[in-house]
Length: 175
Ligand code: IMP
Image (cartoon, rainbow, N blue to C red; front, side):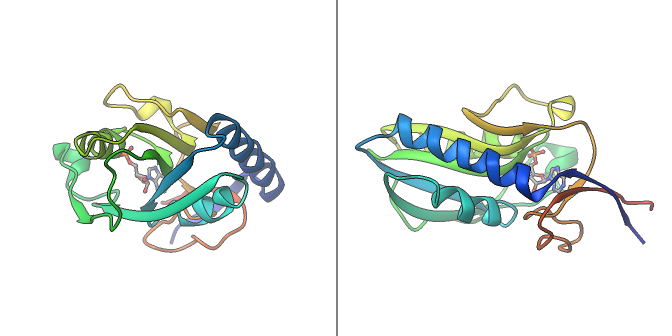
């Protein structure tokens, strides 16, 4: 049985930071339409809160890639499970990700989306765990940098559980 050991970032802190990120994105994209792309499934809650803090025209779409713990952890391989419905060509695109860990997922997604000729491509990520990075990659907009601990809640899961918690918590898998 795994156990939650502590709250790392509480609901209020998350709300405040998401509001700031939304304001920053709104300022940078004034007068433009943004194609916001959520990475399923972890970013869904962050995504839903973030887009409501943005006062530009926003179109949303979702993409799904092979998840944490799958083959890419050992082989560096990331696979597309569900592609976008929207075209990317000529659009101002913002990828919304839950966490940058090894960086392999984001590296793969940026490569795929850049090959479709967007007008611009930026990344907004809620959390960053820099200690675990395998490839050099960073976010244009970042919520919080965290230590090398496994987190659940606010969209983050362990074996598909805990996504509905309001706070971001640390999980001890051996608990
Ligand atoms: P990366 O390709 O190693 O950067 O992996 C990113 C993905 O791993 C994220 O989109 C998450 O789904 C998952 N992940 C990484 N760290 C955690 C964590 O602490 N809790 C839950 N999921 C995580």
